[in-house]
Figure 1 (tube, rainbow, N blue to C red):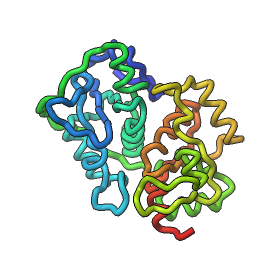
Figure 2: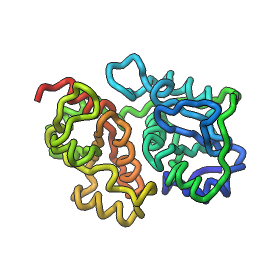
Figure 3: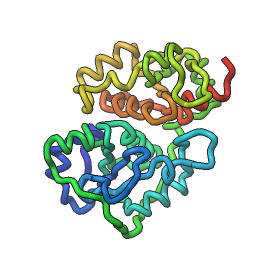
Figure 4: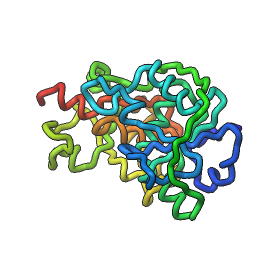
Length: 271
């Protein structure tokens, strides 16, 4: 069974109806989650440790893209196969789940979608949840194929910033983008990437679910006059992936996430 690739997004109703599909793997991408006897999950979900297992923890900045080998090994460890159908959720609605969705795309896996509304929406429908247990999984056979065109780094963002052929969109709040409040990361200066524009990721939601595609398209069309490449940034590469998800739903195809985002850029530049 495959996810409808025209969407990259599934509803809680869809997940409930397909919950017993043989190749379905549900991933809980809740960020900074502590797994204990009180932790709740959608039944049969597998935890994705986005900060430790699926990031390069040796890098100087948070949530750094892992190597192809690390991603492949970690995906196999939670039982991801080449023919798996992966649905990712988190406890906020859509937040860190979009980052995991994007990582799978970066490493060549297409049969993956985000659960619209995540755990809150699932609970609202009173669908089955359970506590975590000490699950073990048969090692998967997933093979990673890194696509470097989907991510950029400090050198790349500087090139994009000086190009008239791309649009850099920052997912941080308007207050952070306009430098009217401090950054939440201690010691990180205020600022913006030159020639970037602002689209706070929160503007894409009705509550904890994404707005309809017609409304999302209006938002992007207001900012982007044509289908030129879009580069997404945020604080540390997490919410930029929400913009990438929304743009994908609106049929934008040349999409790039700045992995280090403002944490890297603000640390490596003085003004």
